[in-house]
Image (cartoon, rainbow, N blue to C red; front, side, top):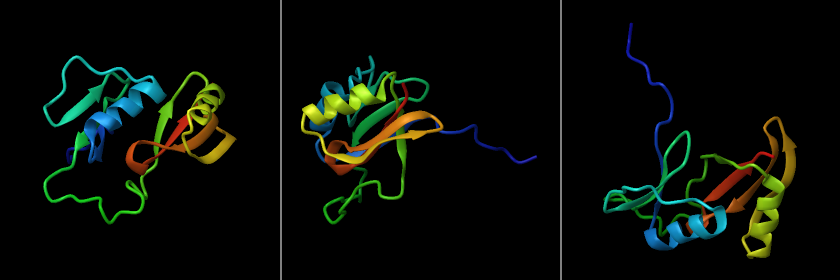
Amino acid sequence: MPVAIDGPDFIALQVHDVEAAAAFCEQHLGLRRAAVSPPHAIVFDTEPIPFAVRALLPGVSLADTAQPGLGVVLWFRTPDARQLHDQLVAAGIKIVEPITNSPFGPKFSFEGPEGYTLTAHGG
């Protein structure tokens, strides 16, 4: 039988400014940095899958990319999507898709670090 994968084990967004992207995640999403990160990335203490922002890989340029991550849908779980939505709106964060009901609870999408569209759900 061929070897198979178990599923996602680590997710990272490639960004130009790692510190600014990490600050966004800390200030607006409440993420906490993990105890250890490699020199080119900041890893957050997220469950069940570690999440990070990292420097661009060699040969990657997002300069001509209108929307980084286009085609990838990245969802984050939160205990209260409506409250997070209101916090982001109050902070001036662009809401890309308004709150709607989903099989996973209320959800909405917003513009994250460097233009990535992120989705939050739950509550």
